[in-house]
Image (cartoon, rainbow, N blue to C red; front, side, top):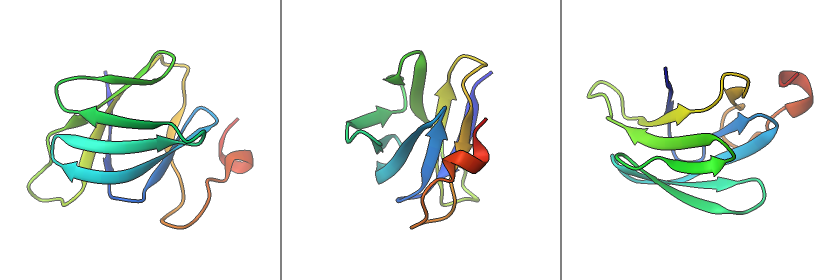
Length: 98
């Protein structure tokens, strides 16, 4: 089963110990992401993009009640995926990832 996260521009999340930022939500079907090493990815609705080895992200349908865009993650079960603190804060890697 895939993990789905609602995101806004500027949100950050961790995949394992690596940070990824939502740079721009272009539209419901296209979102631009940036990894902590500076690499940029465009993820789309019908084409999953591999952002790390074995970790694929695509966009999901936006729910009408929410303004957030949705990212759909397909990754091995041993890969931890989690949100970071709100806008402007760094991920607390030492505190949140084991």
